[in-house]
Length: 566
Image 1 (tube, rainbow, N blue to C red):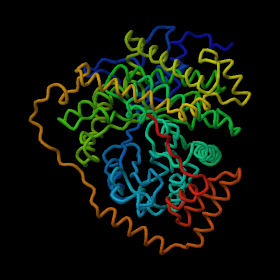
Image 2: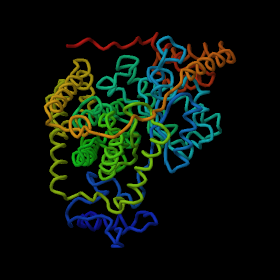
Image 3: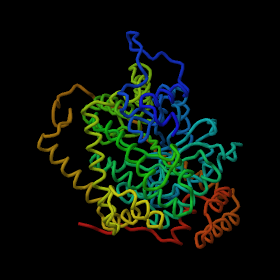
Image 4: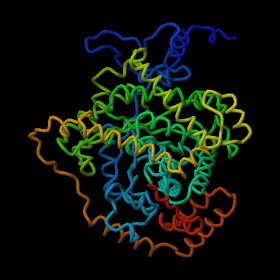
C-alpha cells in the first residue's frame, strides 16, 4: 500500500492541494485575516476526495472560479450575437444559447405552426447560415458554448459544427455542452419529436461521435432544472435527474463505449431555488451519489468519470411579477447557494424574466450579481465553507436518503427486485447487459409516473401558498409597494417577417438537388445501424434546414403523442 493511501484525510488533501495550481489572489477576509483553503478534522472528508461531497477539486475556487455563463437568446441571430458580445465584453466567461419555440420543436420559421412564435422565447435558428451569424466574431475555440435544446439537439449540434468549420475552427478542439436530455422532456418539459427509442438512437450516435472526434465536448447535459421548474421537490429533482444520468450511462455502455472515456462527457444542469440550505445540500448530495454509482455500479475507475460537473441556473419559478425588484434579492441568494454548493458554472436570472425576455439593463444586473459574489464576498477563498455544519450535513444525508428511495422505485418499475443498497448485484446486472434503470425510466414515462409525482408536489406547494403556510413577499404577504411597471423587452413582429424572408432567399440560392440527396442519405442511415452524425453534417453543409432534417426523420420514425391521463 502506498504512503499516500495510509495518510489521514487531511494529509492526503494537503498533498494534493500543494500539487495543484492556485490563482494569484489575496485569500483573506475583508479585514485582512488569512484563511485556510479548507477546514475539517484529520479524518473528515476533504475537498477533492471521493465521493466528492465537498467538491471536485482540492483547491475549490482557489484553483479556478466557476464560469459565468449567462443564458441568452432572442429575436434573430444578429440580435443575439450583439447580446453575446455585451455579455463577454462585461466579464462573462461562456455562452449559453436560448432557442425559440419553433427551433426547440424542430420547425422552420416559415412553418405554419411557427406563426407568432419566431424569436420570442429565444433565438430563431433555421440553418447553418444562422449559426454563422450567431457566433460571428466569437472564437469558438476559446469560448465554451452551451446549447439548451433536446428534441432537435443533434441537428442543431451539426449546424454548429459546420458553422465552426466555415469559420476555420479546428472542430476537434471545441469545448462546450449540448443539453440533448430527452428523458427530462418526457418527464417535465414536453419538447420532443419522436418516441424515446429514436431519440436514444441519435443520442448514442452523438456520444460515439464526440468520444472519437471531439473529446472535450460534452454531448449531454442532464437537466434537473426543468424538472424543478415543473414543480418537483428538491429530492425529486435530485433523484429524477441522476436516474436520467444513469440511463445515459447505460446507453453508452450498450454501445460498447468505455465508461472512463464517455462519462466525463456527461454534465448536469440544476435549479438553484430559494431555500438556501436545502439547495446547498442538494448539490453536495448529487456529487456523492453520482460518484458512488459510477464507481460501484458502472465500473468507472478514473476520477473524471466519477465527477459530477454541473451548471446551475437560479429558479425562474421563484421570480414574481409583483414587486419585480425583489427578484434581484431572490436571485442573489439562489446564486450564492449554487456557489456554496460548488457549481462549475452559473446563470443568474434577470429581474424581469417573469414578464419577458431580459432587457439589456436587467441582463447586466444579473451578470453583476455573480461578479459581486465572486469579487467581493470572500466565498471563493475556502472550499465547501459550510462542510461540517450539522444542519447542512443532516440535510445532505436526508436528501440522499430520499433520492435513494426514489431510485428503488425506478428499479422496481423496470421489473427489478434489486435495490440501491446492493451495488455489487446491480454491477453484475450491468455486466450482463441488463439496463435496469433505463427500463424503469421508460416504464415510468409510459405510465406517467414521473409526471404525476411532480404534479402532486406542485399541488401540495400551491395549497401551502394559498393557506399562507408558505409566504412569498409581494404575493401573499407584504403586498404594499411603490414599485412601478417595468419597461420590458418586446420582440417585434418584423423579426419573424425578416427571418422568413431570409430563409426563402437561402432556399433559392442553394442547390436543392444536393439537399435532396443529402436528406435521402440521412434517411438511409436511419434505416441502418450506421452512425447518423456524418450524414447529418453533410445535410447541414448543403444548407438543409432544421425543419427539413427533422421532417425527414418524422416521416421515417413518426411523431410521439403523449397519452391523455386523468
